[in-house]
Length: 95
Image (tube, rainbow, N blue to C red; front, side):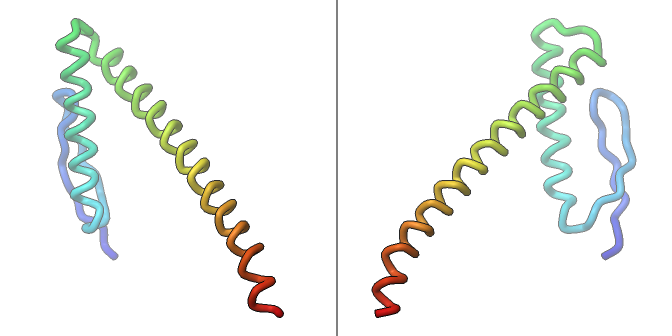
C-alpha cells in the first residue's frame, strides 16, 4: 500500500509525514492529543517549548508502559484461565 503524505502542526511547527491511508485518522488523533497536552503545559506556565514537548513525551511513554504492563497482566490471566479450562476439558473428552 502506498503511503499518503500529510502535513501536521505541533507546537507551531509543521511536519510532513508519510502514513498508510488507513492510519491517517489515528495519526491525526495522536497529533491532536500531543497538541492538547502541549497547550496544557503552556497554560501551566511552562514557557519553554522544548521542556513542554519533553514533558508530553515523558507522559506518553509512562502511559504506554502502564498500558503494556496491563496488557501483559491480562494476557497472563487469559492464559491461566485457558490452562484451567484445558485441565477440566481434556480428561472429559479423552475418556
